[in-house]
Image (cartoon, rainbow, N blue to C red; front, top):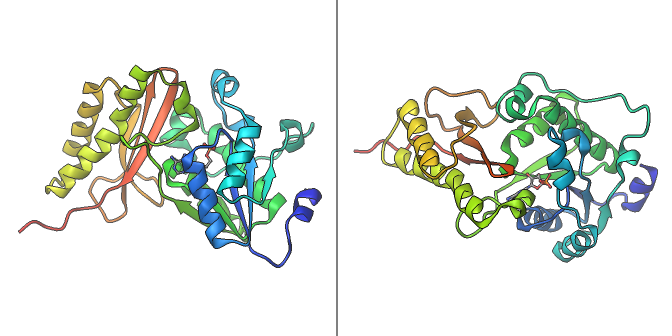
Length: 276
Ligand code: AMP
């Protein structure tokens, strides 16, 4: 920790971009945003074992530190922090950060609430080690971003959280390090998530306001494409509480298992202007 603080330059703004490596354009967009806003940019690469609920997912997680280092530097990173697991969690590590309620829904319900305990704990550790002015996260993991905002607010952490837009492949699939594990046929099925979100947006823009009809239409779209959702829900974007009606803060969030991996996606979706 002392080494990490010593590596950063005091009295200049520091941006932190936490990642698990296997960098793609989504990560690079966060690094570029940090580069545009901060004097120094620190990228962390750490495949955090405590947030994995499946041992296979952890062991299959792609790792290539040399490639990541070159990509991060090219996108504007000044410093790379790639600790070993025993440096982050030395013997006797006992503390974890838990956000009540929010972490038991949706991703928490499917991955176990210890998933978000793992995320919250490692993020607090990274924030404490690096003491950044701003930390950058992706809207792709919208519930994670809300968990982190909640931790920062509740524990009075002196950092600004910046959530950046989801970066997609040209056909709409949200970029994810795990996409590399999809076969071509699975990748086509994976498009079901984005298609369902777009279809729901289209229906809302056309005047649909019945949330049950909206959700069942989106579920049917996904089932037709061979990827029925694990969950598909309209929630408040700040709390992830389910919504029974469209509001200006509505977010449609979805997860589906496709082949060996789970995919997640979301979109902000608000009531259309009344048609006249
Ligand atoms: P990960 O390496 O998957 O833990 O992701 C590190 C950060 O990159 C998280 O804040 C993610 O939300 C963000 N991220 C991952 N995929 C994307 C994407 N497609 N677009 C934007 N941000 C992303």
